[in-house]
Image (cartoon, rainbow, N blue to C red):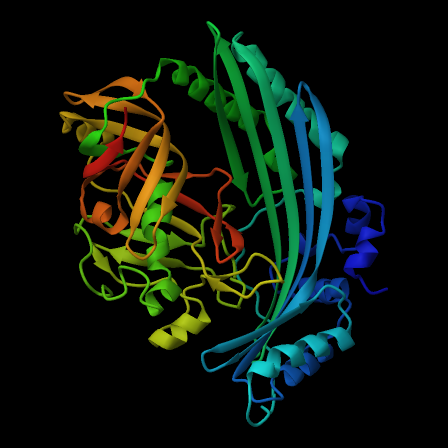
Length: 505
């Protein structure tokens, strides 16, 4: 039986039935082990000889390079509202894509019904961008195991809704018990399991097992006729073992405390002032306002303000910025990226010097450097592009308290929601859900509903102090770019930006 998208949808809406068709031992073996390769080939209903035929067809019009990306993803979601688990859904995504590169041009096609005929048609469609003599394909495939940065003791495909539901119910009940002012709570759980396979004209061949889970909650409290809401979430590349009493207690505590503080918060006066970026959550500003400007495609096109800053000083020498795919079980971790480059840790800024952009294989070839493991895609329906993984600033040499004590009048922020960024100019606006006034070196009144306005590169250059309290924000972050969403994470130690515009009352 060929496992097509139609076949999976026919099983009656049960992802568990589809899961039975896929060998369950994949995650128990090292990535690219002979056992994992055999299981993955069987899952997609193909032979290695089929892959070579498709690559040959992809290059028959003279392309320089071709690759194949196979994906089988099992998605499940569960939600609790009004005190009961009342929504569950599942879907299965199944297909493969063919990419052909000729010079600076890329051709791409994908199929959802994986047969040799369909793959050959896709390959010839993608090859239409190339012209010239056909490439002779002589593949010397190396099947080598690589380190995995994902962890799943218990596969999500083995877990039923009745096994998951009690955890959502317990989180809901914990929130209501924590404070009598709670009037409403919602809880959601999303899990996914992806099996991917990659094959290219250079002889790279890998398979990868990729788990993911998100647990989140939001609570609403009412006091004296006034309502406020707050939420919390965690996301990791883990299996069912992620759900436990500790994560429930943590999310309940965070959502309750955030909501409680909202009742005390006021909207402050606006103006230009020092801003202390709190550890963890402030990493979203680092990601959005600064990180995207380091992605190589923006710099190659001269869109980024950093296009002419490589190997030049861009901030104080005590600052280093990293994009890392090797943090174990992190949502943004990449054991191997979506075009065959091993996961790695990349210094973007080292001691104040811009040392590297974030590269996929196309931008790396343009700049004459090695890819950095940042070639990522949303699914088999998309081509890979340079994307961040886990982006953070390394620790400094002072304390958060010393930073706060140095500010006579300013604000402290660490709870952000939405925002807007101009990648070219670097201008940004971020909405701050919660923060604090700093008065005479002390945190005083909680504040809310303000905007932080500035320029990303300038804000980076204006960081004068960095604390030694780095935190990775493990919330459920998904980064959008060019119509694609990818799981990411970011983090920060506390840092002082000497001046930003605060939009208050």
